[in-house]
Length: 78
Image 1 (spheres, rainbow, N blue to C red):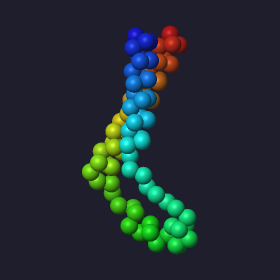
Image 2: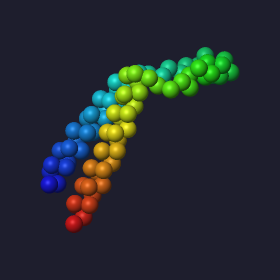
Image 3: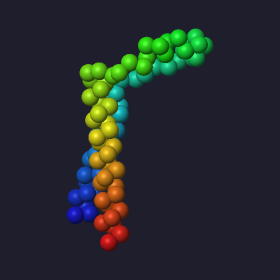
Image 4: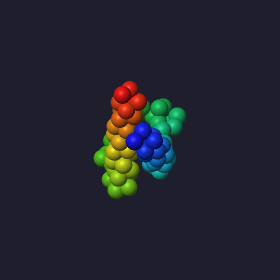
């Protein structure tokens, strides 16, 4: 049981890394700091399409990772 959970944890870890790397980059450079934040007016839009899907996948994988970690600690303690 412990080995199976550990294997699942490793797989989920790799999937989280892939999901984070696949998310589109939000570029903030030095010119946005000097412009007074005028570019932030339209940057707070709700993500749609692929970006929203990748955010949900990352969140779900994060919850699964946390649950598997807790399960491993519980099993190793008993």
